[in-house]
Image (cartoon, rainbow, N blue to C red; front, top):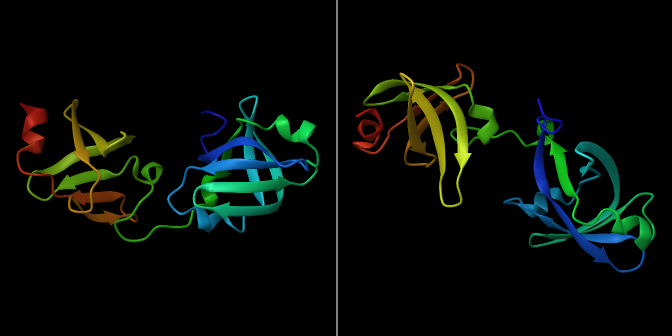
Length: 175
């Protein structure tokens, strides 16, 4: 278990902003404005999540200007440059229906509408152009794209996911 297993990556502090200890940060998220009310963030300090309380935050596109409590000069603020920012997984808004966080579906049983039961979803591999679900069928790796057209149903209660893999895709892995 890593120190950050219960956290997700929010972004990174990029540089100083002004002379009052404010910093500029890049938010690596789809909806940056959802973080306008943020009052705490965890910085990676020596590979541990350390809480920093936010006095003020302004967001424009994926950039944020943040002033932290107790960081009121450039000397203190400069120690935060290049630090990664994290938030607890528990603060993620709950997704409904077929939308899911990658960490949320690990361990789900994956069933293909044509093929039948494929196996347990080991991990979602987040490649630059396409995230794929990694499933092992009889010890053979099967990769299925994470895509609205492919994911038919996510059943959180029973920890199953129904997919409709493109024709021939599963066969490629099992030959």
